[in-house]
Amino acid sequence: MSVEQSLLGKETEYPTEYQPSVLFPIARAESRKNYADLAGISQGLDWWHVFELSWLNSAGIPQVAIGRITLPATSNYLIESKSLKLYFNSLNFHQFSSKQALIDLVEQDLSQAANAKVTLQLFDVDALEISRPQGICIDDLTPERLENHPNAGLLKHDTEQQEHVEISLFSHLLRSNCPVTGQPDWGTVFIRFQGLKPCYRSILAYIISYRQHNGFHEQCVEQMFADIWTQLQPDKLMVYAAYTRRGGLDINPCRVSDLSWMPNPIRLARQ
Image 1: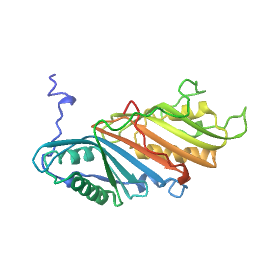
Image 2: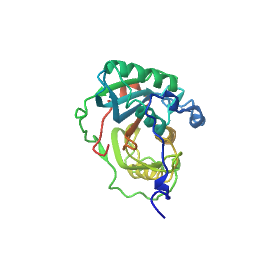
Image 3: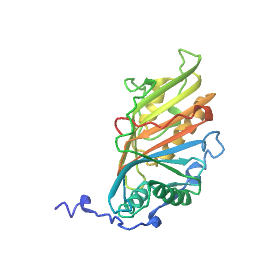
Image 4: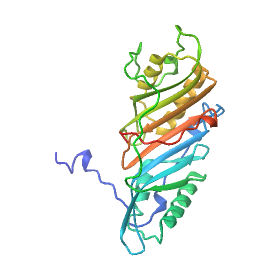
């Protein structure tokens, strides 16, 4: 079998003219129906980094930048990532009089698709610094048991140290699958927790259980938030996943129970 005849040979047609119609909104309500009233489930932001962002200036000369999209979790819709990639490709040969003209158009189109105010910030291609994760890495622990799909029942309190704590944990072992293509998505998940001390091994087992789960990045983070909140009943909670890029985009959803715990967006080495 030749490469052209294999799955690798399936072509995608990339638009070369401005085409906002390719944007594909996905309603958040369906995935939230089991925990729609949970505090914080729609409190937070989705940050996207766009690494393949190019357009033409008024003289027809190509320009490049890194974009950071900020989409509120209160929006009615998230935007499917491949459609967003196609949208940004449709700008590659479009002329803009200024960077602000590009920003204004993109914000208009994405806000319409999400049915909420979406913002775009541009960075020079060398401007985004690499951050180091802060907190306790739990990846070297050994879970008591492993499962192949998310199970909130894995989450336990620490029975040996029954004390109230405020902790920041992270794991690089998050893996889930795109529900559209089946391709794996990789990420680092950060959990900030205030309440009765959780068992770190149980949290790691829970994160690992996503390895065969099909879900959009935003949905996975919201399910994590809901399961930890319901099962461990913290006083405050933040769940933030920094997914690695695919198709020139990385997605970084964050949900918080308290807005004072809203972090600043970061970019990790794997992104």
